[in-house]
Image 1 (spheres, rainbow, N blue to C red):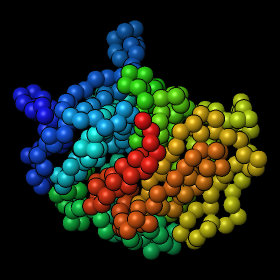
Image 2: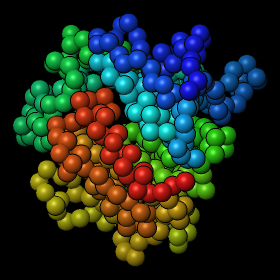
Image 3: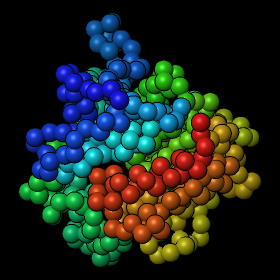
Image 4: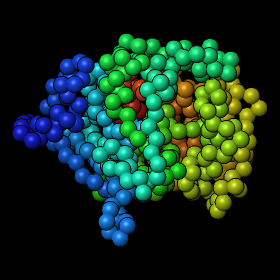
Length: 386
């Protein structure tokens, strides 16, 4: 098996998050990784050729023994970069290494205007970076925050959260500090939607068929990539994708105005192809269930029957993976139901149903991260994509 020395060894160490600053010693690079490299996709010159915008940075990890013709493409969510998939804040190997060890070629794409892709305020508009307390409340220590809208701790499922790998999940916890150091400024979702879809399509044009793995905000962008390249997307694994359909999550699961139409195309702000054809999303008839199936869940929106079929997204299977204690626990089932109603072969996989309890929204970083990746591996193996 080929060895990796010199610059390749340094690149691998950086790619796998092997930093002396990590609170816990990280594992040695895997001999399963044969090559590490980077390139950019998308982008165009602007301002009379003075700058480039829309480009996306891609890091790839190639296995020494490739078992799958289909590649995996990972796209992080809001405020996040590809570091989420390279290692955990406490130094454990990330999902990228786990999948390369299983013989997958892995491509990790920073959203345009994010991380190593570069940021241009003139092109992307004002950026937003969330403060530490917001990150702790939403991701690392939701169980500790005060009551909200009559709920004991924020959203009802927050009280179940206990899988953050650090001590408190708050500033001063070395693992939290390591995670918060990775948070970056983000552009608005409306700006990012087309940029990510275009860059993702360009990436697939370059590498060929792939499974798109999204998380949170990038979930909507994954649907847009599937819409643009249905012949190259072999499957989508949506880890707690942005949702629920049509309207943003109401309190206490979110802070959206329940009357504001956030996703006019059902799952996205950008056009999706429906059958029968839909020229204007205003013609997409919708209804809301009379009551939630459980008090701890939102009332789902769906299409009015007869439902239109999602013509492009129905060409490949979809997995939605959700944890037990995340704010998404109240509404990810709505996204799965919407896809199923529209003819998309969708599997909703709840970690709790597999004995994995207490994880939050950043489930690729928490204590059950390896087990969560194994659920994805098992699902992909069952799809026989190659």
